[in-house]
Amino acid sequence: MNYMNSYPRNLRKQNNIMINSKLNLSKKRIFSGIQPTGNLHLGNYLGAIKNWVNLQRDISSIFSIVDLHAITVPQEPSKLKSSTHEVTAAIIASGIDPKKAIVFNQSSVKEHAELAWMFNCVCRIGWLNRMTQFKEKAGKNRENATVGLYGYPVLMAADILLYKATHVPVGDDQKQHIELARDIASSFNNMFARDGQKDFFSLPEPQILGQATRVMSLRDGTKKMSKSDASDASRINLTDTKEEISNKIKKAKTDPHPLPETIEELSTRPEALNLINIYSSLSNQSIDQTLSQFCGQGFSFFKPKLIDLAIETLNPISFEMRKLLNDRKEIDKILRNGADNARKIAEPVLKQVKEIVGFVI
Ligand code: TYM
Image (cartoon, rainbow, N blue to C red; front, side, top):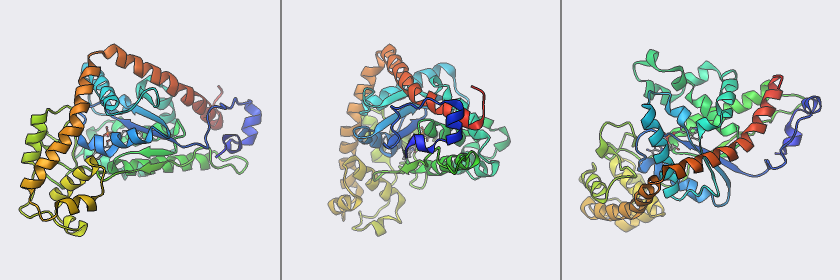
């Protein structure tokens, strides 16, 4: 999409808008975010970060540590700061290169909050009432949930559209939120259409990639692996030691049957399916390939192979992460530099949005 053509012509003339020529919108751009709350786990790594590392090579990429999202539930201030450092260290240790991709913490670019407000005035209450993640997170005590938690997906839409991102690589649990971002973008386009131009925002595509798009709990194959699960044995943290990884996989719930030959047979066995998905993703092979490698074998044969593979992948990441965390000033520098670069894209987009909406700027 050519930005010059998409911007309402009458407003362009009226306001003499500066078009940022560096913003090449015919190109793909990815945006994704991760919350600085607690330990990152294998689900975050396989469902999101690993894909980001592969995508950053060829596509202009922006990754945000979403601290504004984190405070939608209570956070202890000093812990929030150190979690922001830890998550930044974790994604860099996993292979995100801050010289290639923009890495920054969300609250440093105020345009996120400003655009979110404007989208609050576009998004309908009925759309938010359908969000399953809000229902899960708020639980029975919905009246007591913060307005921020309710509006969480509106801020996500602002994150993505502030950079006119075309693709959003996330785990499967975020699909509904990206669909909402598309609804907000398209509603904004229609509300402010001028001269037959309807596409100020293009609609971002979710990218749900790999063999482990929804990593499940090691204790219950029907529940998502999550930071908030009370049982640490339910997840493999990126900071776990070799022994912890080994013990958690040894104790992971399974069933008494040998591994099957086909995906159809596997689909009725949630714990076996989860471990096979994890193995396939870690070894960069298809589920079929993993099944042909292990079919007919029991878990006593399969689990040690999975343990070796998990340790081989995660151990260098936690080692590198610890090294990076020895110099928190350097991490702050990376985040500040990332925020400066993010702002260069965000400021002109927000300025254009304000002009479209009719603000005096
Ligand atoms: P967060 O921090 O909860 O999750 C970060 C990423 O990890 C993925 N993920 C999983 N993938 C597979 N299996 C799992 N068990 C698992 N658990 C988490 C998530 O899908 C996500 O990709 N709301 C976002 C953060 C965000 C964002 C954005 C993402 C804020 N603004 C804009 C994309 C675009 C979230 O889930 O964070």
